Length: 159
Ligand SMILES: [Zn+2]
Image (cartoon, rainbow, N blue to C red; front, side):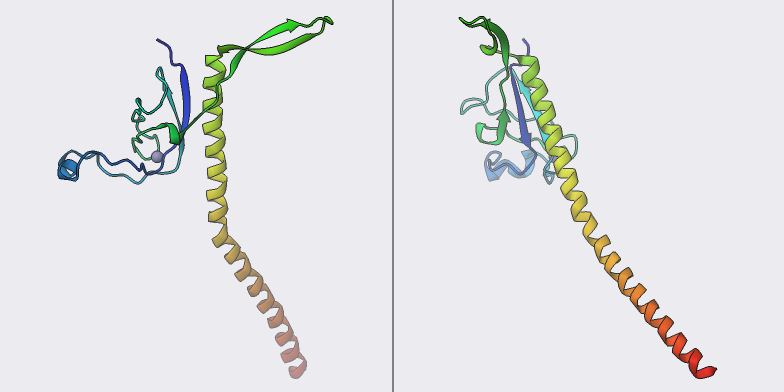
């Protein structure tokens, strides 16, 4: 009953169309602009050619992306086991049993990491206008310094 596959996908436009254009007008899902957020999708079934589920509503833009093998990432973590070699040394090796909790944690962390990186890049884009402001301020300071020179010169003339 538990989920066995833990995916990360990016909320971006799907290439797949939803049915024929004849019914698209009435039955199509309302169009929203996918936001680019990384989300998780947990499922009991492996996503492949036969199983292409639609993701839950994106928490940021409510888009429901159709998922397929090409647009999802997953990382299977395996349950580890300690074995002792002929020399009596202990090694930690992967078993062939998937560690569901660790795999789920990977998906959650990976989506978070990607979203942090996305936030960072969007903040960097936002900081461009303030660099322009900084440049303007520098020019203003230079003008003021120049103004001081003018005042000094005018003062010299008055004295
Ligand atoms: Zn979204």
